[in-house]
Structures are given as C-alpha cells and as structure tokens.
Length: 315
Image (cartoon, rainbow, N blue to C red; front, side):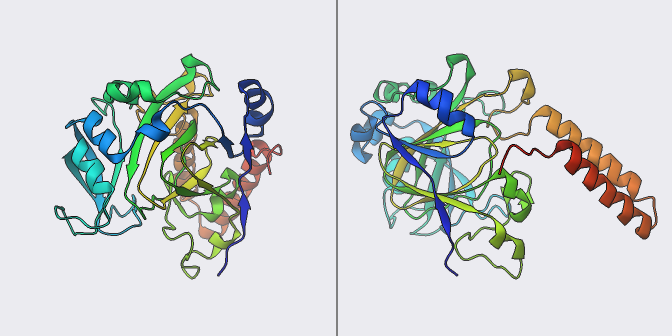
C-alpha cells in the first residue's frame, strides 16, 4: 500500500524573530535550512570524531535487526569506547561484533549519572563543543538537554513522542523522518509514549486497522538541516546512511509543570500523570457496576472529557 504523506515545510534563512513570532505558535513540524551550526557539518567525519571523542566509554543499543523496538526490547545494551562505536557504526559489516556481523548501533548520549543528570554534549564531549552552535531560537533558561545521537546506516527507531519541544540537528548523513500529529494518537496503538506499530511503511493492518487513518508528515534531512519537532508530535526516524545528530530539548512550559526526576524529557507532565492516576481509580470504581451500566456511564464520561478537555484550536 502506498502511503500518502504530507511534506513537512522547508524554510531557509529563518530569523529568530520570524520563528518565535510567526512559525513557533503554529505548533507544527518545520525544517529549517541555512542555520549557522558552526564547523560540525564539515568537521565531524568518522576519523575526526574517533580522534577527538577519544576512548570515553559510552552505553549503546545493539540490535541484530534494523527496526529497533523499545516495547519488546529487541536489542541489547552494551558499552564501547567512543572511537570504536563511531568506527563500527560507520561500517556495513563488522569484524568485531556482539551479536552478528551486520548488527546495528545506536548511541543516545546520557548524563554522567543518568538517574539525575541530563545529557549535554558540551559537558560529556567538551572537545566537540567548539564545533557546534545551537540555534538561538529559545531563551537560555529554557534549555533542558543536548543529546548526541549516532546511528548505523538503515537503523530505524520506534515511533514515540517527547514532552518538550526540540530541534533535531542533522550534522552529517541523511535521515527520513515520519511524524504524526498528537490529534491522531488514537490511531497509533500506544504503549506509554511509544507506538506498537513498528513497521510504519508496511504495517499489519489486520492487527492495527486504525493505523491507516493516521496522517503522515514526512521529510528528509541532510547535513545542516534542523527539524523542529513540537512537543507531543510522534516521530519515527530512519537513518538512510551513517549519521550524526544532536537533539536540543527545551522547556516551553513553566519548569514546575515537568517531572523533576525526568532526565530524558519523555515523562508526562505532573498534572497529566495525576489525571491518569485519577482516571485509573475511576475505572476501578466503574468496574463495580454490571456491564450494561458500566458501558453506559463510561460512554458518558468519555463525552464529558471530550466536551471539557478537547481543544478546538487544533486540526
């Protein structure tokens, strides 16, 4: 089945004022071209990263298949020196490997203590800090994290959402990104923040029949492109070749809205978590009723939620 995708708009030479005042309030994905990112797009070759990044130990995902699934955990966590990771991730076949000679590697950098420290490339990889400039499209006090990402060619990451706005900076290589609107969450078969539909190009519509109703937004990223991913937008990322990227996350809600234990930027806001707990208690109470009554009052609750909580300001 050929899927119809809505192209993500691409704009070149966007100023901070134009982004903040006119584009950002639309709350839709956007590819920015021509942003000054520093020398990283030309300097961050395999040899350069191996030399400058050094032998710092990094925790990585290793999978025998291209489609990584965080729900079923079809990968293993391993540790490699950074220079070895870069060299292996750039290969199609490996002389040294953990699972198989064509295994895939994925680095999502972490803080020094992932339980309490956020990732920041400027702290974890200080020798690379001078090569990259972050887009100055948000206030410095809103900054949350900068995540270093390295992917093997062909690697596909699971569809998920984050609770903070972010820029995906494609430093080297090419990626294809497919996004889904938060308003289409009911078609994505969610398990927590992630979709159960792993193969978004050839989904099992017998198992996931509603998935065909989800609107797809799609773009290709090349070196130097910056993709704005608004909070709550689902995204699936495919590395079409070996590539290096950096995600910049920032808080667009007041700090007190976020879970203070969240170092990844993917825990639901505290008010949303409390509401989910209240809903669970309500469902347990409904379970005390006979089926006919439980069904009737559950439908009334859904209508009440739609009337009081659904926004009419979005598509």
